[in-house]
Every structure is written in structure tokens, then in C-alpha cells.
Length: 239
Image 1 (cartoon, rainbow, N blue to C red):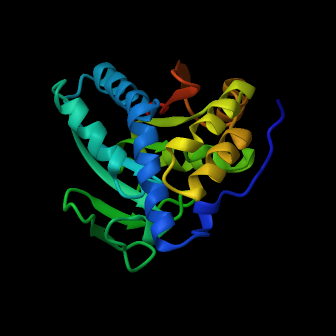
Image 2 (image 1 turned 120 degrees about the vertical axis):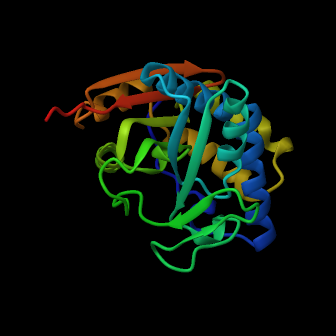
């Protein structure tokens, strides 16, 4: 199955405010019950275990309203792992309380996390600013050269690892996306769910791209249903 680039409506807010709100709510449901939450908790837990940490600072790129960050934080707190999330999104309107400038952060509406409007390909942070940097359902929006650029930027500001939580392109996955039409609140989701799967990458394609970065090791796991979880470990420096 070849990759097809189909523009996604939510990327440009091509809908009414209610449709956009409903589409973001759909994403929360998809992540909560169809692999996003489980994938993210397992990836961050693995980093915490290998680094022997019980507390991690975490930049969630394309984090939107922070729903996944909240779910993941609550889930890992039950395992004794405390997270300090910061959200970054290029669309201020997707954040609960939009940031008014390109690098200005404001709390989300639930008051839990700092939200920052910024470019994922030129992250506005210094080297080693966060323990982990992640993205969920974001990398498939990027073209191969941009995937390499984003991962390299994320590795620059991460102390330990970059986590990629995304879809796996597969014909059966396309069928499942169509089957979910009756569950979606928004017409944007009905369009974007299929478009996302068609433009997603395979595990082999992701591995080939990440080999072009400075990651020391790349670990990839499959999660149900049709999710990939990637850990790109940062090359340790010696002084």
C-alpha cells in the first residue's frame, strides 16, 4: 500500500468552531481507547525505568488541548512516575487557552500545564531542556526530510530520548478508519481519520528515516491497533 498525501481538515481548521472542538474531542477518544494512551505510557515508562527516574520533564509536541498529557500523567502517577508536561502546538486555537505569540506560553484552561505556540521544526528551547520529547499522531503529517529534521531538533533539546507515537499504514487500518465513522462527532474526523492512515508511515520507513539522525539507538514496538511506538535514544556526550 503506497503512501498518499491527503490534506487533513483539522490542520487548517477547515470547519466551524463546533466542528473543530468536536474533532479535538474525537482525538481524545481515539487516543484514550485506541492505542494512543497505552503507547505513550509504555514509552515514557521505559525511559523512566532505564534512566532510573521517578520524575521526568516532558515536552509534548503537537499536544493541542493537553488531553493526552493529562491522561498519561494520571496513568503513570499510579506507577510512581511523576511527569511535568509542557505542551507545544503551532495552532494556538487548538490549545485550551491559546498563547498570544509564537513563543509565549500560557496555562491551559484546566490550569495544569504550560502551553506554547511554536514550530516543531525549529523548537524554541535550549539544548537538554527536557528529559523526553514526544509527539502523538504528528509525524505522519511530515514528509521524510521533515521527519528527520523534527527528530533531530527534538534530540537536541531532549536529555534522554525522543518518543514517536503514531499510526501504521496498512490496508486493514484504512478499513477500520472507515468503520469508525459512526463513532465520530465531527465530519472533520471522518475525513481526517482515513487521510491520516493513508499518509502514515510503515515501521520500516520510520526506521530508515531515523537512521539519518544522530540517535544512538532506535527502538520500535507495535501496539494494538496499528500503532507504532518509537524511542530514539540520545547519544550520550562525554566531557
